[in-house]
Amino acid sequence: MRERLCPVCQIRLKPQVHHGVTIDVCPACAGIWFDADELTRLHEIDENLLPRLDLLYQPQVVAYDPPWERLCPVCRYPLRPYHYLYTSTIELDTCDQCGGIWVDNAELEKMAQVLQDARVMDVPTEAQVGLAIAQLEAEAAEKRARAEFWSRLFGFMRARPRFPFL
Image 1 (tube, rainbow, N blue to C red):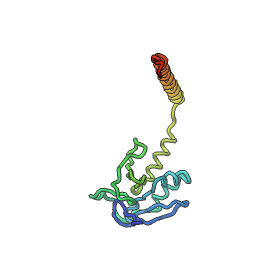
Image 2: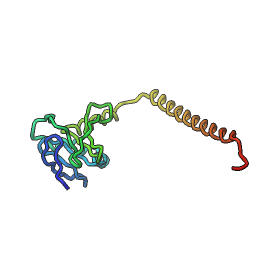
Image 3: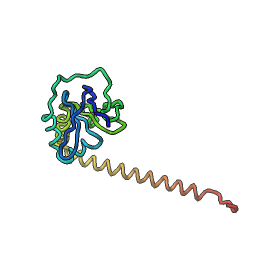
Image 4: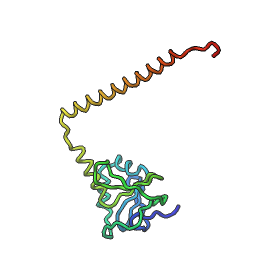
């Protein structure tokens, strides 16, 4: 197994174990590599752990954006940036080959804040009712479309001429 290098600093990542899950931390920039499903597993075990990791691991260098392409620490394929929860400004990097996720320093804390804000958002009762009605209407429309498809198919099958030699 080859050594895992930080996508930002290109130095060796240090394995750290939290609740039985081994993550890889960059000692210089404090970015964290999560293998596939490790981020989710840690969040399910203790949702307060992730922001604490940002406090636990502090960068030793000033944050910078390297001129080179970020590569996966595991399989060395280019990482693809994406927005956490689509609407947030938090940009994470993922490997399409192995499913791992690179989280830059302080992004775990921002992610926790986004999740907390989403939970606190108070949705008015009228909006909840409207959403429930819209969902029921969509389900009913889908059932009607499915029934219409089968009706047409069986109608077509009944209309086919029957050949005595078949």
